[in-house]
Image (cartoon, rainbow, N blue to C red; front, side):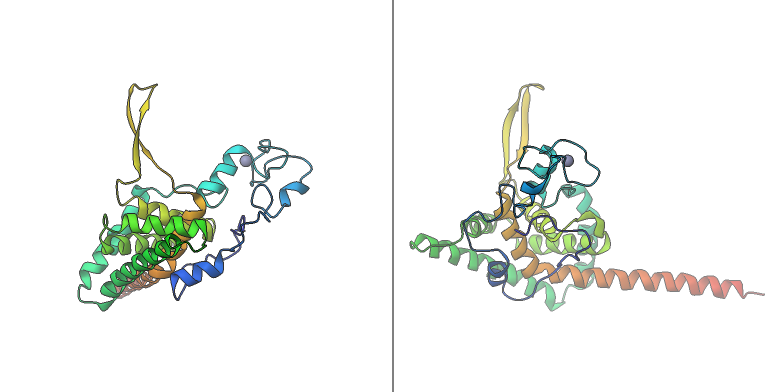
Length: 269
Ligand SMILES: [Zn+2]
């Protein structure tokens, strides 16, 4: 994990090639903690005033080694950036609808089949990772966790559901770039929304204040979520780019048409 990404850095929307290989080259293999106690390359140790480093936050840092206050540190860990909020199902819905309409408009386009297959290949690769680990060979713990997650999801969701959600997320990233603060944030939210396709991760717990059962989302380990999101972006992210392009072209042509109509109407005698 590369720590906090600056807003200035462009998000890497879609990565090309084999998702497993790409993720392996992105995430360091080392298990040694070279990153300091809070994953920021020991930067935190240099802070003298112990105020939270998140923009606009003056809260006290969580500890004398921490760069951020408690809540910003939690956001960084859970959402991939200090100022990242979870992308909700409701926020994603308009984009999901755009994706569904676009697929319905082009039912025979080869792209959908290819993308479905890419998910199936990813599931196969995840099974291979688990088999590799179970045969006693060493591997990355978080990669293994992400692989188990994919295999757990596979029987519960249809490949098209996954393709639609990833397509919608990348579309949202392109059309509403402020919703995602960094690459890591995008990957985390990708993992979150794809996991949200099933009830597998919803546990129930007793809410003492309200005296009733409450549904609670069981989080995947943040580092495993990064792996999962990275895989999804590499394997299926390209769908979102194509979809956003088509949407933009349609909006441009609609705008052109009404401009021309206005012009023509203004010339009426
Ligand atoms: Zn803070």
